Length: 348
Image 1 (cartoon, rainbow, N blue to C red):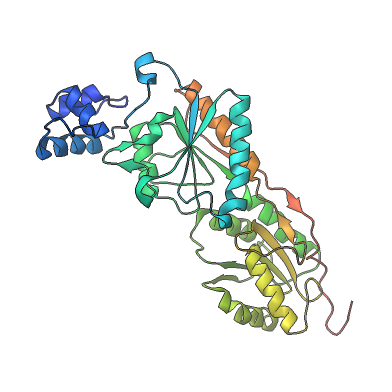
Image 2: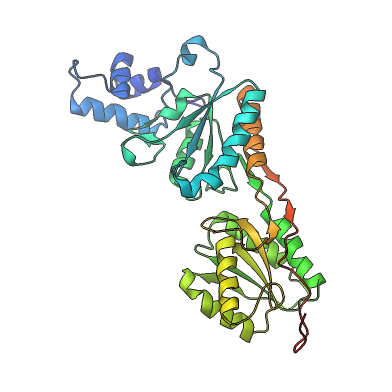
């Protein structure tokens, strides 16, 4: 049985394993066989070996020079430029650019050809044009992340990302600690019944981290409910449960959800924070903004971009550096949506 090399396989390794010449591997890899006869069976054999051995093509000249291009790739699992994503991605990219420039590296943004975003195509990845890559996205392809890790290609994920098998390097926002502090502030103000609410998938890692902080604030207190809403249309029902259950403080994962809770309260002649205190945990996706300054946390996107870039460059300059994860503190936003609970029948 042929042993897998400890280092990343080269074109020469693939050629030997597939029983072809290195020139044939190069032709298959670069799809320059229009004028050269390569049988479909040979092509498929080469591609199969690439996939099985985790070959990552290096289309740059650095493999010949034995050095570094001083280029960092940036790959997102969702499109960067649609207007709905501008506020989400821009601070990350700003931090990456600033840190890379200070450390003498260039950034190279990768998108996927053909409309489908994927890291690997036919056993190879264009990310290898760069020395290493920064990955980010709300809904990543975890299998591709694991495959990239197994190939030996250096990368750092921007955001908390757990995968099966060996861990990966990532830089995450410290949602748990800040959410705990915000929840404890509600209790300190006299709220006895505090709940957690979110829209969408509660299985996403950032959502789990936020909920973890909420639950850490609960020991010794009456545990508040955790609500997960599938759609905005469920908010009126949520507010009815809040009022019926005597909840006076809500920890809302998304600003959009907080806005919908406020609108539902206003339709009942109620308000924030007089009738309900609300803190928001930094997710501003889809929010209209401007109506009220929410108390909560800010996602340190720019700093996360900087730290991830610094961590990746450390790994590039010291290939023996261990896999690491780092967390970045989330600043608190004072806002104006938290107050002491009002006594029944007493107006402010």
